[in-house]
Amino acid sequence: MSNRSAFTWMFWAFIFLLVNFYLQGINLLPDVVGYILLAVGANQLRQSHPRFQTVYVLCFPMMVLSIPNLHKAVQPSGVHFTFAAGSPLLWAAGTISWIVMFFVVYNICRGIADIALASLHDVLAEQAMVRWKLYVILQVGSGVVTVLGLLQFSGIIVMLGILVLIYALVVAILFATWLWQCREKL
Image 1 (spheres, rainbow, N blue to C red):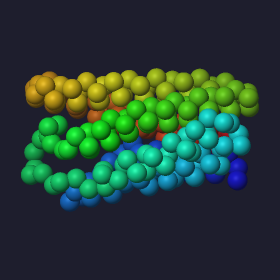
Image 2 (image 1 turned 60 degrees about the horizontal axis):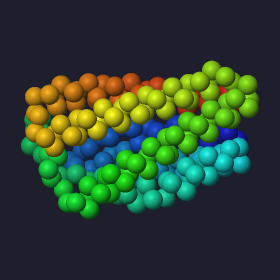
Image 3 (image 1 turned 135 degrees about the vertical axis):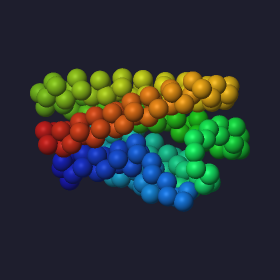
Image 4 (image 1 turned 45 degrees about the vertical axis):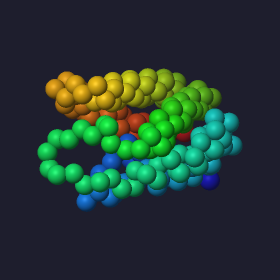
């Protein structure tokens, strides 16, 4: 398989992983599908760079950890923040997923940067590390919103939550377009 095919799989994986649509509590773009697609893409890139072996291996526990996100309880209409809900086991799974996803995204970005440099695509390599930094900022922002939710700062959390949501959309678009560029150039 070519790198073009691998980056196509990864492009679609990020659509599933970065966008969540729930209808009647069912996730229409489930993360488990995203991790399967990511594993397929990473598997195809394992020969190109060893970091994709790491991504490939990490996709399997992420598939399992993402299963609880297939369905969420339906809430009445309006803005609701239910950070106190859920079992400690779900919180632990969410925290582990969050940490493992850092390693997944870092290895994707670093692996693509190395492949791009070897292929003399310096701009794509630079964009890889910019995408990594954008992802870290997004996760820090999400963490702050979560902590504020736990501390019951509802006024601040709505405003920050909206800002993080807008930023997440921008990051998702930047990741998707960058992966499509990788598809075309690497």
